[in-house]
Image 1 (cartoon, rainbow, N blue to C red):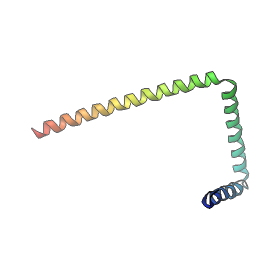
Image 2: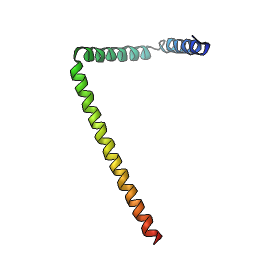
Image 3: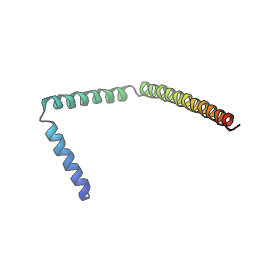
Image 4: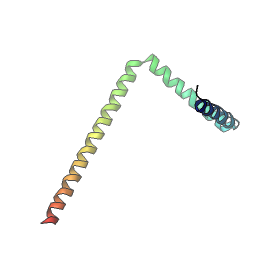
Amino acid sequence: MRLWKKSMLVGAVVGFSFAMFKQEERHHVINQSKEALDQFKEIYHHPSRTIHQLRLRLDQASTSVEQFVNQLDQIEKKLSERADSESR
């Protein structure tokens, strides 16, 4: 492993260690880890449900992007019309 990678890893471990001195941080890390583990278990036990949810979210994102592009097209059209009318 290169020196900079080792240094970065050591820095991360030291930073994590110092953060764990605070009880509030420890509880936060433990709770987040438990939530992540629960999510992984859900994905493992119900992969088809997870894929279905992912497809729904991708469809929603696609629709949102399409709407955004349409709005940009409308803005571009109005700006173009405005520029044309001002140049006359």
